Amino acid sequence: MPTAAPTAPPATAGPIPPLSACSIFPSGNVWNRRVDSLPVASNSATMIAAIGLTAALHPDFSNAGGYGIPFNVVGASTPRSTVSFEYDDESDHVGYPIPAAPKIEGSSDRHLLMIDTNDCTLYELFAASKSGQAWSAGSGAVWDLGSNALRPAGWTSADAAGLPILPGLVRWSDVAAGAIPHAIRFTAPQTCDGYIYPARHEAGSGSCSSRPPMGLRVRLKASVDISGFGPQSRVVLTALKQYGMLLADNGSPWYITGAPDSHWDDDELHDLGQISGADFEVVDTTGFVNG
Image (cartoon, rainbow, N blue to C red; front, side, top):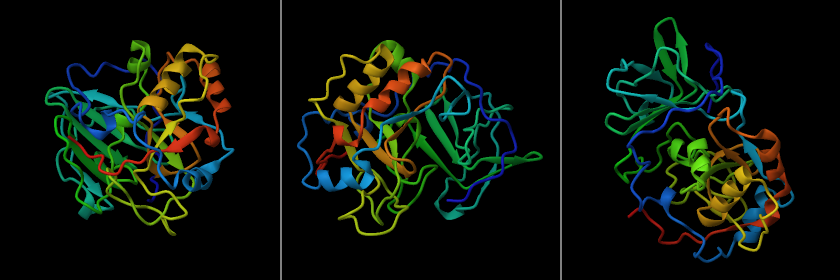
């Protein structure tokens, strides 16, 4: 997908507001379901090698605003803005509750995430840009957080896999509570020209027999000893064992996405790099659907 020229400074990493009473999708949603008891996929070794057997796990978030994908908590009083889209036919045309000074991802992807805690609706934009008073984006998607509904087959979202971004973020509120109860979003350097559930869109090339598809579910092996890691890292690694991670975009290998927050201990999170691709396995999610 194309990038947009920055028109606003990247987000600073202050404390993220709470999500109030909104749950991030129903408990039976695939993002929220554990995978530690599911079998290993028959193509696990091939997929892990394709992503990077020796590449290190990397937390793509920090206590500085330039790293990670922030989100904005809005309400019924937030004005709605009309957004024009490059990928118009696969975008949701509604009013987007963009605050006056929104927190936007600092990289070229410029993701802009908004959760309306009044009606628990998630709004996500890719390559968000403002010129004068007019907003534009590469694509936009809206999600009812009380529903398991997916994008139409073949449609993108604000993410390459056609998935929502917010439910896969490592968020400080979860780590502070001692557990991340959901899968984590991650990237891989090359993907195939296909996707598997719950992804709805592909953004790669080549055969899915040798390259991973969007929607691939990977978990940290149960045998990996995480007792020597710091408290923040242990929470992340425990989630990777229990819930795993979902492949959602092309990018660097084993980059997991989180929201920037001033509470993160960057020195400790750096230790996650002791984990490599060889410590992961692909989960067989055959028949694993929302419900």
